[in-house]
Image (cartoon, rainbow, N blue to C red; front, side, top):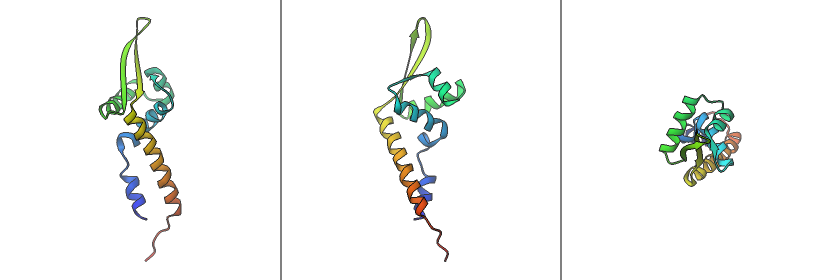
Length: 109
């Protein structure tokens, strides 16, 4: 059962990193979100959010569309089907590991 801890240490960092986990969790609950909404909800700075979104886009987990609304720049972010599956699997995996870790007892040999 020590494998639980190895699995925790080996979680997909593309998603498990706290800022990206927050972004992906938000996006899994909505069809799309604009950059400002994500910035406010996650508490990330503009630069930090932009960096994390770039990494998620590079991994194929989110789609970023830039355009204009009333002559103002607007960045919309949506989760891809690959991203939706990845975040759903990630949360399910965490829940399973949490249950298993609660049953773990140290081996005193």
